[in-house]
Image (cartoon, rainbow, N blue to C red; front, top):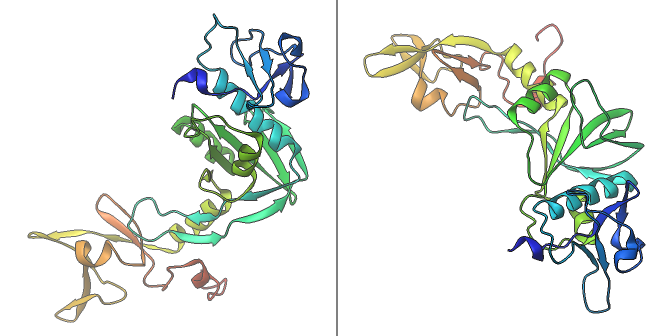
Length: 278
């Protein structure tokens, strides 16, 4: 779709985020493009979607993206509730199934701040809810990159990314509000402190077991669930047994992390143990 077909519905007026519905028609709207700073014309009529437009001889490559980004932050800043996505423990170095910690749920928002600096991190939106704080990042053209993700992990600040990059058509305020505030596929936790805490619990409880090559096979000796036995000694075949075992928490290099001795494969399994056992 050509860039000029994408309609700007939010702009800046005297430095304030402004919806096209709240200004006069034409050049008298007094608004400028959030990307290039050029004056905009408010086009409002009975048979068209109200939107801002640049002058006929001006082409702005990033006007729509910047407008969408601003509109998203404006909606979030005024929201009273939001549905946050489910929290999953993702085991990055194994084939083990991800573990659901918490389903998607609606929460009440206590306070919102826009682009407040936290050290060298400037999130799009800071959310305060239930006595806790988390970030929301609006992905229109640039997702959270690895460098920023590492900063978020180091700061231990849970962060939701809302992916609007595929919304390549005119966006109404109603549709954008649905994407931002309801449960849908555009919202995901890029980092979640609770999930990370649980993942570290799995790492802590597991035993490190060496992978041994014997001929063409890879074995792990003394398999705690007795996958195979040779002359009375239990072992596992790494490829056939360990790779898809519910107790294989991680495998890197020449070893695995195995929670089979403790019989822990889910969050609920931890609840069965006493503090002395962990």
